[in-house]
Image (cartoon, rainbow, N blue to C red; front, side):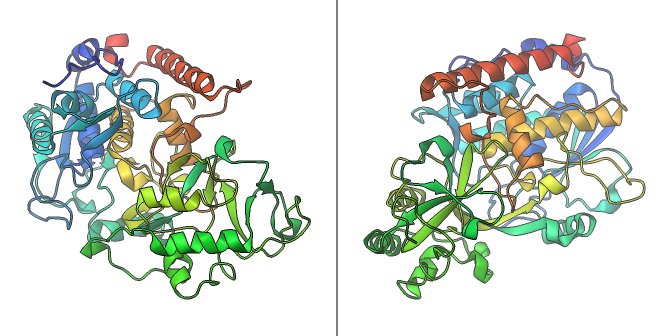
Length: 473
């Protein structure tokens, strides 16, 4: 039997929020493009706030290579919505979503299946319920056709078309954002939690000491490098879908493919140790894997030029052979797959609104979901809720809103809209996205409990202070 909303996650009851939503007066029209997680949350939120919503979903008229049904919110990958633990980043994000009137999380709880510590769902029942709720909402019209810009009537529009955005819509997005700001393949290196890197082995230095010493360097002696290459070549690989087969630029080549060209290819390429001196030995190591900070606070680091097709379990085993990473906590693993997403830090603000280049904007445009550079069902849904809130507010000429940096959603938005990384990479919710505490305790468990408590307090204060929820007015 599915647990009741709030029974296992410490969620806030949604009844008082929904009652206020249903009492809201109509304030305008909103268009939502895409019937996945982000699109459904955006449409549901805007409609419950009072807008008349048109939701465009091209399936089944036009199918994607990954979907097989007409259902909204169809799950095409895992059926897991991550941790149920209210003390975890995914748990806190779910709690914030429910407090904002999420349609997805309560539906997931009603259609849950055993998933250990994670919230897992029955795929068909979950998608069928969400479809029924969305199609049955009196303020939502679901249009089964591909959206095109000529359908825009000047009303606020949310683009939430996900990683498999159609070629024609991708072309339009590229035309308004600039092609250099739109990526079609996700070639990302693993990311680790900064405080799990062994600083007695790893040192901070940029090559030839040029500029700020922003990089951490993991040295490998010849024997350590050989052991790493052996494990890399033996590791199990992810088999790409047919539609994901593509030619990658040389700079995006998986490191296992480079190693197959010759055992020394990496030591003379990606892991070349030039301009670096190990302070422990005073000499240049045989090879070096560099770590680059992923955010301003330097709470997480990515492994430079370590894009890979290894399966996630294999990545943990292989990369923990690197000196200094033996106990590393991986916040995300490397991926190489089809994923259309924006260079969001350069294009959208903390309200998820797109800034048109020059002149008057033809209509208020928001982006939500994986196309913004978040990863995961829950993360997509959370950005959909915020985009729905702000599209509604734009339709009624009200100021846009965004949650504090210290909340789970605020931390996710900080990465999406204000990333410090040289090249923007998608990310799911994790501890590394939360801002560091002013005076953090040494005990990691205590520190993380304090971060969650701060997130809860700041979210509650924000929700109580703003006026977009009618029940709070």
